[in-house]
Amino acid sequence: MTTTAPVPPTAAPADVPAGKGPWQLARAELRRRTAVKVSLAVVVLFLLMAAGAPLWSALAGWSPEEFDKTAVDPYLGGRPLGPLGGVSPAHWLGVEPVTGRDLFARVVHGAQVSLLIALTATAIVVVAGTAAGIAAGYFGGRTDTVLSRLMDLTMSFPSLIFMIAMMSVAKDVNRIVLMTAVIGLFGWPGIARVVRGQTLSLKHREYVDAARVAGSGPWRILTRAVLPGVSGPVIAYTTLIIPGMIATEAALSYLGVGVRPPTPSWGQMIAESVAFYDTDPMYFVIPSACLFLTVLAFTLLGDALRDVLDPRSGRP
Image 1 (cartoon, helix red, strand yellow):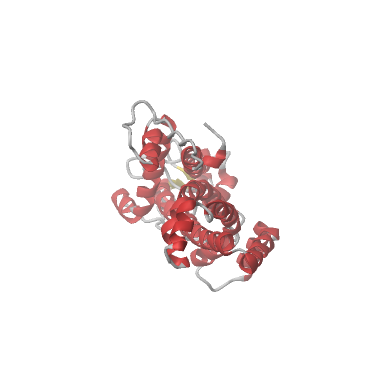
Image 2 (image 1 turned 45 degrees about the vertical axis):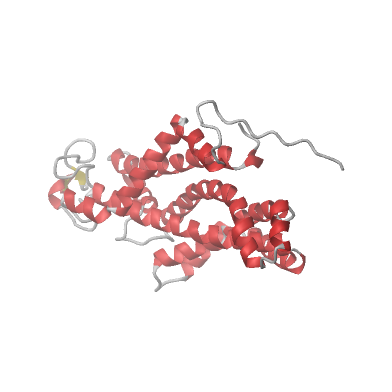
């Protein structure tokens, strides 16, 4: 009878107790990274800003659509009164030129719109892509062929041009719902391919074969055996695609086919601020900094999660 040498367990870090599972080891590794802590703090800050937008604007005393003509100088083309774009105890981040709308209220409500669209579109992409990838990888055959060709067909579209066309044609619809659906429509094939490849490597593992021999049905095998095996790469990939979703929403709003005024959006605010960047640079800097910090924080967090959770990344 042939015996095989046991595979030595992966060495745990020195300060992690022995016997910890992979998720405990991953959390311990992430806690040691300063970039992860800072990125997570920034992400939580903007999520709280978006979730409590009505509360924060009420504390500031202004709604995002409320005009304050006393905060701008009508004789200087509506330039904000005071330094740094009108920063004052009444307007914490200044005001918009010409209109006098409170910039803090518009930034926090813009965070709500931008993150709502990005996170909801990401959820659609992850659910659809994971389901399609697991089905294609596990069942194979005709199912794999149909789903793989559908992935190729979706990825062959020039997505940004198609998004602009669809958003331009649609008129009397909820723009937030439409943007979420359109962005999610073109994002699922990427994660579906990742999950499909991972599923192909898992479906013939011993524990999957044992569940099949024990009489478990496909649904139980997929949810109890395969899905936990692909969860690591899916979580890492999810965090990495959120910045792209945020940037896509901002780009569509910047081009004028996204969220329409008076509903605020970071991309829309950046587009409007271009005409005032020389006279009121703060109007451009503030929404741009919010967009930059959010995208950067999610990107760094996603990179760290990929390094720890995705064994195929090949990075330390």
